[in-house]
Length: 174
Image (cartoon, rainbow, N blue to C red):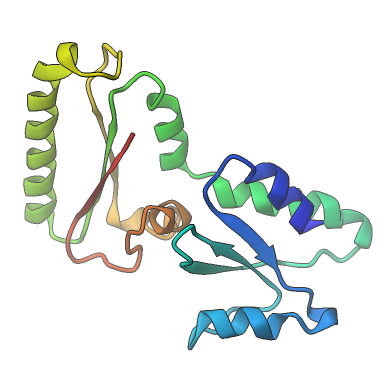
């Protein structure tokens, strides 16, 4: 089931996924949590530690035999994205990751990138005396404005706005 797949895949994460059983009429309690936002049915609801929610549509397969595979694939898609994969690759060796989410204004993006690059250079000087034993300075990962939808869950998990493409946003992942 989706709930079983979610429990296994999200075991070490700080979010949980709840799935409404429409046959049992459970969706109304979940819809109440979403306020004015009305998701496609059926849906899963990601819930963050600070109780923010994000609804995700779930396409029910034609055959009950395909439900398990569909549930696993859907849940894995929740936790995978190109930027998340980059973070997972770099995080173990880097002091930290600076995530730059670009907006539509290229001048603002460049100013934000320059500020982050300057901070990385300053931090690099102090790495030998810092408590985290690493040789690799912070790394910068950028997400282009046109990729915000593909990175929606990552940005949501960091408390960032994936709908905002005007100004750049930044986060530090350690």
